[in-house]
Length: 161
Image 1 (tube, rainbow, N blue to C red):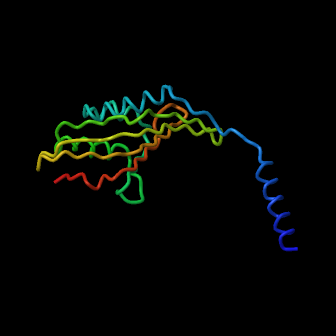
Image 2: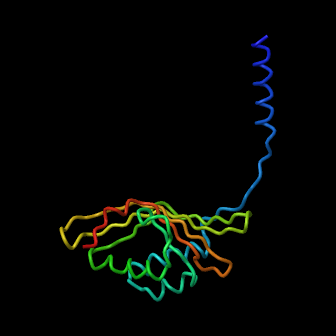
Image 3: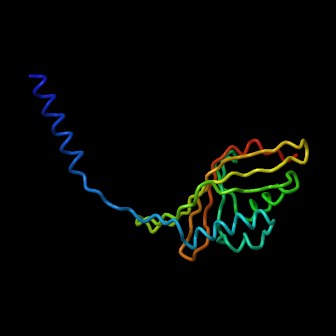
């Protein structure tokens, strides 16, 4: 009797899993103007061009990256801090790994660019080459500006002293 009940339960479980309907929740793009904006932002970082980067972000934009605590910071504060990277590191590069994707979700009309990068620079203090792999998520508002940026990588290795 147990085998019979177990067989029926497995059969019903299989029916439920096969009866679920596929549904799209948005579109993924390999080419999109928002991807170009993220690339422009990275170039502005490398060029220490805070005014260009400021124009790319919404006035109320925030940035959060792993290792900085729980609270995102205003973009203007973070951009000023990032400009000091060049005071501590030479030959800074940010290399794209693979290609970025623009994701446009139906739910709440959410617009994201997700991208993978390798940051590298040579320490002015000890001459060591530092490489940090990270993934970045940029959320865009309806005006086409970045309203939130989140980066995940081991930035604890960066020494600014």
